[in-house]
Image (cartoon, rainbow, N blue to C red; front, top):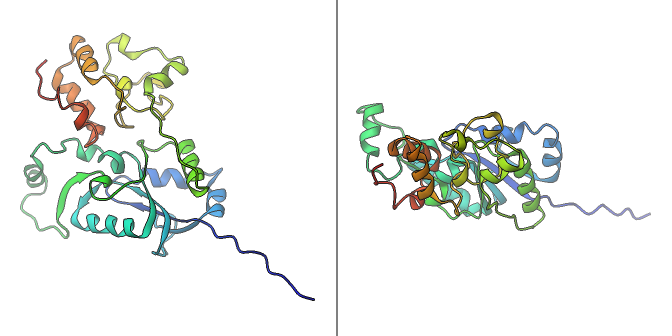
Length: 265
């Protein structure tokens, strides 16, 4: 009797990589206890050092990259990943915007800051000013957050492995705050960046009475000039607002504050 073999199912090849950052986004994926087994069953994870010490580097359907690029070695590594991957996803604030380590992006003080912290030392690999990964390679999709959102992450992975185009979130944190029936912290004259920050976090901080710090990056429709004017009217110094908004804004915030970054209160 002829025995027919079952058709082998070809799973999407996935790689998950970490550069300069806290690795919190990779940890979030590992800690999705109710979905992690389904994820590993649905895809062929070739490289995920945090989950397995035996990576197989080769061609990839999707590469998820966490962390900013802060050394010449990392520049070369991210280029090599881009060459092997059909799709690259910037995962988390550091990969998307540069992270807090890029809060002084392009202010001309990088060499001075490096020397102030490390002195005259010889580095194993030459440091560079921290940048998001799209300063070095082409990025196909962005998954913002600090850390990323578990529901949004699993939804994005599900869409990509099934060949469905992911949808961008275009609404600010303020909308989620209203949906959660939170009291507006701006009414209490607190430094909240919700009006100019991309939504997706479910207004996690305002839900507990804490002002939004902007960790999901700038909302492209945000009225930055008006927010600065409002916060300045509360007696909050222009320099303090700028420091807060650049903390997580990195490279991505620069084009939105170009006209106001040098204004005096």
